[in-house]
Length: 284
Image (cartoon, rainbow, N blue to C red):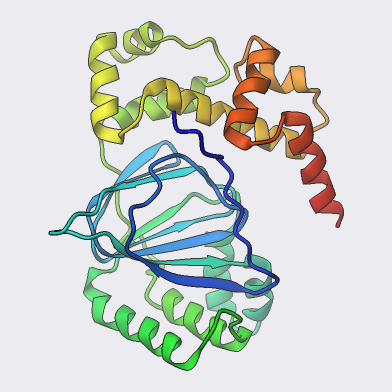
């Protein structure tokens, strides 16, 4: 497992949005942000894993990740198919307040930005030229990174206007064995899990599910279990008064020392430090 923090803080610097184009490889590990993230793919093919599901990533598709949503994007660009995308990080509170005079757009944005919502994935390949035009126009009238809120709102409204209210263009998740594995883990992560147990419950051999999961997601089943448990532990540390030992047991760690070690490796801080820092941010 890569030694990267699951939580990637986006420094908005009190601005409402960070807007950028990228053509470098995406970090291929599970992570989440404190703010809403929108990724529009203009070039590149790969996989997006979120909400215990996997989706095909390809040009013309847009992915919307609510705050604190654990996800992984696995796209390896090459000379023939470079990975180009536009990434937008938003302060959802500022945007929601500014959208109040526009009830329909406000309703859509409120839904996609709620940390209780699932991630959204849409195929907007029919709108490729329009999307290119609104991005180009936004950059032509906005220099630097301190974007006026009214300009940000115009851009967000333009994007929201092509997000269908029906599910017609919502991308269905890939129906695969790895999806079944992730769903099963999502329901049983707090239990004592072994490769043998998971394979027996799903009707496959341990070697087969291990190999197919690695091929389909780019990671191991053990990595997914650990990341899922750590993410759930962060939620509990933020929202409950459970002790560290109680949190560890609740999310499936039988040894609190091992839990603290894994937590610190993935989150940089210990569970106690994370809880203390979170409370400080909420009270500031």
